[in-house]
Image (cartoon, rainbow, N blue to C red; front, side, top):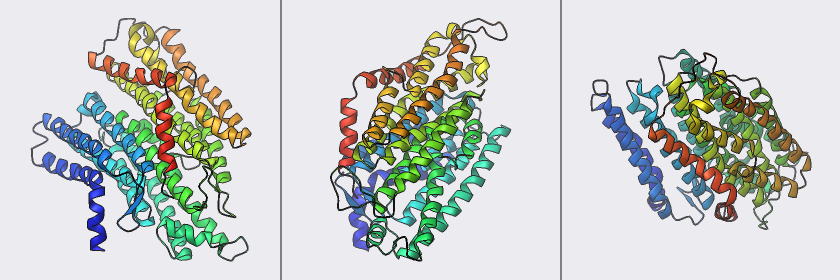
Amino acid sequence: MIEIIFNSIPSFWPEITMSLTFVVGMIVEFSTGRKDKPSTGMTTGLFVLAGFVITILQLPFQNPEPRLLFDTMYTIDPFALFFKYLILATGIVIIVFSMQSAELRKQGNIGEFFCFIAAMTFGMLLMTGASHLLMIYLAIEVVSISSFILAGFSKKINRSSEAALKYVLFGGAASGVMLYGMSLLYGMTGALDIYSIQSGLASGVFAPHAADFGALMLAIIMILVGFGYKISAVPFHFWTPDVYEGAPITVTAYLAVASKAAGFAILIRFFYVTFFDSMIDIGKWVSLPHFEWNIVLAVLSVLTMTLGNVIAVWQDNLKRLLAYSSIAHAGYILMGAVVMTDLGISAMLVYFVIYFFMNLGAFYVVMAVADRIGSEHIDDYRGLGKRAPIISVGLSVFLVSLTGLPPLAGFIGKWMLFSAVVEANFIWLAVIGVINSAISLYYYARIFRNMYLREPMNGDTSPITFSPLVIVTTILFIVPNVVLGLYFGPLISYAQQSVQIFLR
């Protein structure tokens, strides 16, 4: 065992670096008199940012050849590497955003905020490659506990404390249900790593007539509760709107992008290793007999995208609206898992990269405007098109991209998902997806109307000024939304390569 551990460590350096970033960052924060020196928090933030940069620079040296580390605890493959790049890039952006946030600068312990971002990121890196039930559970718990703290970080704001409490309650319930399901799965198969579990299920012992088949179905559904909670899939989404509205905007953005990506990474690996025939390698994933989980995922996809879009229509708070929009996008992404093909999974990966640019851009504009006008209410965006034209154009680009209209990148993401679904003969699912995209256009159009067609409620038409940094950052997010809508070949190729050598 010691030999296995020492042989695994050289391939585990990015994760080690991120864990050291958290530990050393906390030591730096606690040893420099953070309350007496407000600038210390930013110093800690720069240290954590450096840790993120070092970690992402180490990824190219993490040999992407598929293999297992620490016996069967952790998997290294291009699929995990794809999500690691996405998560670390999101973390870097969130730290930069947080340094600009007036909401967070009011906190006396902002240095701790940056440290817990590192801790949360460490957990998400583990989620991308976890291939053992214990590692899956521990990785999810690391992310959950860190996000509980971050959601309630604005202690002086009642809604933030309420959000954290609801997050803890729902998270604890989902975690307990998932852990019990894992214990049932272990008891029935005698294995903890997903590859051995797959071998046990493939032996045919758990046929529908078997006495343990019902218990096995119950175990998998209970595990799905934990995964559904992480990706905000209906009916496990109840925490999402309140937490997204109450948490600091940068935390909301991190949960909406990175945490969701990690949740999908672990869901795909678990289902596509455990319940699919690993002997078939023709680009199409064949489910083991009696385990048609794509139907379950199809139902979750429809419920998630429909409820998210329909309820978003009635939202007046922009953060809450984006929360329901995030739920709907989880439904779109689930469509790629339903079709059981490499094309479907690669479409999911492409969508996540595009989602990174359009969703973080939208949250950044909401943060910048809230810092200036002190409100996230949609009615307070009246006349913003005249008062802050560049920022308004940026928000418009991001929302149009989220809707999935050409020629922006969001169209390419949805086009790939819908194409994969149609190719797999799930025509009805594609039709529901298109209808939901039309619904999303309606509630995004409310924001356009307020910005460009309505006058401010208080009659104030004076310009709203933003720093050059805010303007430049907004433009930097606009550019990829346009470029990836026109030139997307390399991204699609990289996503396809990441799936084809997925360690099954």
